[in-house]
Length: 434
Image 1: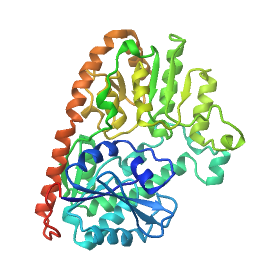
Image 2: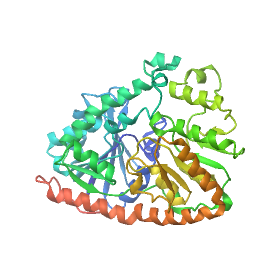
Image 3: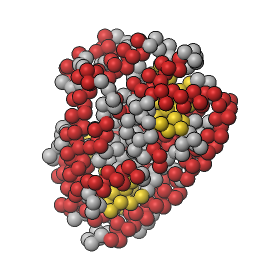
């Protein structure tokens, strides 16, 4: 079966093959692409600024295609993108088209191109996050004065926290158009099912859990090898990820645990190197820095920058507890990675989190805007010591079911086969493993 993926960004293998140097923070597509390429003829396409024509590269049993994007900002609608994607469809003649994510306008272009090419019945859109919904939660209880604030960097870019929220609203227009036109969608939580139904009651919903990166299936957290009172948070660059809630919780716990530390995979804006780094400070980072300094937490917050798969895995294993203080999520892969490894977890009860982790048996969930509850549950895990391994064993068992590689891959191929067989205008005969 010939399968064409349309993705937001390249995976690291594509960067190597296509000789690209831009930083890419993509993770879960690696695992699923490695599994799928063994069973199908897989093409991986993504928009790339700077290309004047489609560029093709061959990886390990996978073909990468960089689709020209004329507009530098990925969040802006490129009128030429539909034509470029149509050309890719015409050249490949895929049996199935799988579009990953609705967050950027090129998804709408890809759906329009599928309609124009007569491929809409064999096209499915995966829900990752939904900007039309996440945008309404973007401020995550921030005070209005903080959201209105501008740093020099924000002034130069003409955008602050409110501006970023408005960008989500702009992109949401194309997300809604794409989903109103699409006939098939893939999801995995009560949250994404409810959201897509509200946007398009006629859309056919297919359930399919994800596959995560290999390292997280291979290793196991243990209390003996972790660092007591060490907290790990995988993202914190935008308000709705809730870093400000984490800092509040940290301030409450510092009195009881003087050695407590919070590690976050974001750029270190607390200790900028040179004036250029200082000028990169945005308004949300300014707010976080101000909170850290006010609470004397400089020695208790560590920013790790962008990490590789192996480095991420190491951070989960070192942590005493992993936290997810987001104001909104679908099914966060960072929580899935923590669960696969067995790192004790505390997560906000938002979006699809309740479909992943059982409160009190596998970890703790709490109301996202109650940092004192976050602090309380972190405290509970600290006090458990080695007894936290009962959570670890339970969450690993549950995660093994959610992220079962063989089952999830077979389920995905079944969806592809159903789409192809139900299509009114088959293009090629298409046999598995061709």
